Length: 260
Image 1 (cartoon, one colour):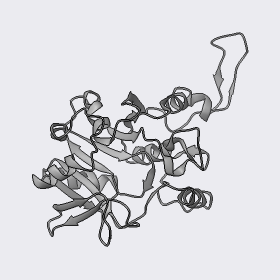
Image 2 (cartoon, one colour; image 1 turned 30 degrees about the vertical axis):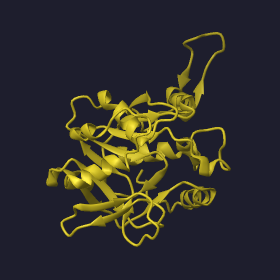
Image 3 (cartoon, one colour; image 1 turned 45 degrees about the vertical axis):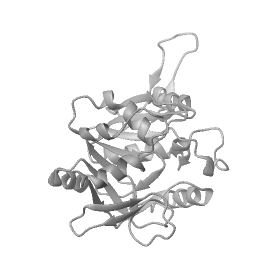
């Protein structure tokens, strides 16, 4: 099963931390937050990724295209093209990464629609944001999605109330989805989605299509959106304060998402 990661946004709220790189490349402990997200999924055995690229995509492409150099000690002889000798290996060997240009200004729904062909013949796939980490149990998330037979599952969490609030029924059906609530007291959209292929029928190529607006609301209306409740750690990196928090956790070896 593939893991799709949304990596194309401008990240305007965190420009004071890293103005010249895309938000998913902002480092935590020396590695991009995108790498941390991928590393986390890989600990559950999911290492086939599709990256939805946009703003400064060349930075992400360069990082992974030259990953062997970034992650290894090596010796080379200048003037000899094939002289590079690596002196150590890394545990990311075997990752498959598809880098898809999904548009500079495209919103999340359009980005997802534009990678439909890269899902291949898989019946379902995972999707997450490229700017947040958590200790969501991916194994249990997959089991939950497979058990209910609906098109979509999102992970509901309890962080600060500036994200899309969920109204959840007793049977874990999502009854309402308010992307920008005035007052938040319940669970909110923490990403870590799983979708059946049928979700693509809710999407189109209009670059203004926001996944978290009309498509989600239509899934709710059709009774096709379920919530996987997560009470553990979840933290986006939208501000310099959150950047400092995540780096402090990592440097203190208290990062709940680090399972490697």
